[in-house]
Amino acid sequence: MNIAEAVAVALRYNRDVKRAYITRVMDKFSLKVAEAEFAPDFNLTSSPFASGGRTQTEGEQGSDTRTSYSHNSAIRMDKGFEHGGSMRFSWNRTDNLANTSGGKETYSGSNTWTASFTQPLLKGFGKEVATYSL
Image (tube, rainbow, N blue to C red; front, side, top):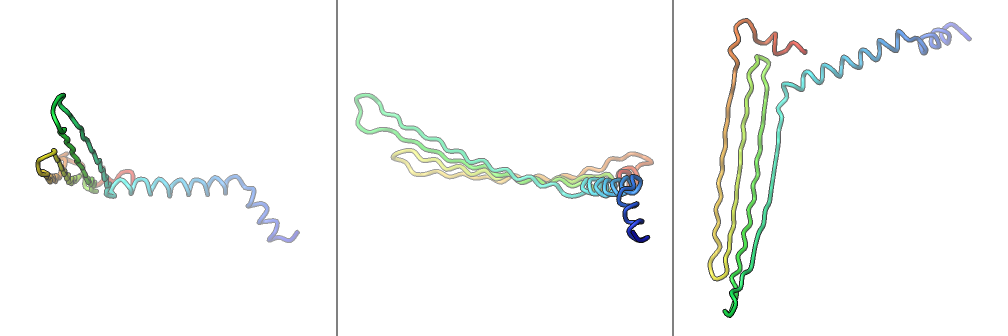
């Protein structure tokens, strides 16, 4: 065994070297988690719904049929800032379609959106406290 092979064998099974390597990997992961705190968070939800029914009165010809369809979609974005502030934006869309036998279809839709920004006013704090984990 030459000197290069001896050094390689000694380093391969050295606990201090393994511990330092694992500590470095954990530090990198902790930094990524801390940086993700300031990344935007997006949520998308969608919920379709359908209902219908048919009624027939005894002794009468024909029946009354009704159907309705609705769909609700929402998008929300949350973002934290390094100076302690946070921003939120949300948009909600609702569509409804209804039909009764003998009548025409009725459609209704609506959009709702909100935007907000909050900044805490704590004297003596700021970016240092918000980015402490970094």
